[in-house]
Image 1 (cartoon, rainbow, N blue to C red):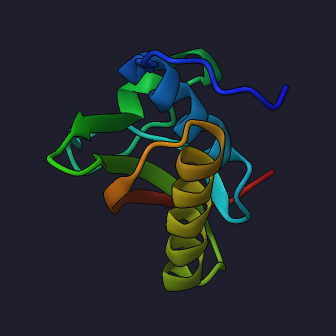
Image 2: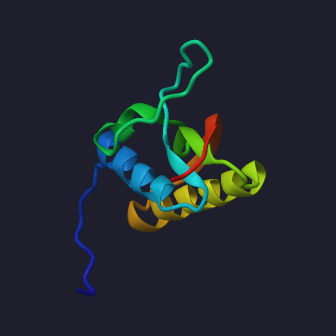
Length: 115
């Protein structure tokens, strides 16, 4: 299709959260998502059907701000995993949803040995 169709497109935050969650779980070193608040200093992994609770997407002035609460695999470089995650999330949102991204914050809530 080469013709442009006039109009506007609105993408729900739930769709953006799903895109971000799938991008995050596809990143090397990410074991899963965690709740934003730690209880007793212990991060618990969220099941795949509750990924949205570990991701926050807020609309900003010129794009979206994303917060990710993750559990990282033991033995991986946390800085490298976080950088890869940030790049992957920015790419997915800008490529698939064509949404500009202001900021992506990665909050490492725990480290877990993958089995």
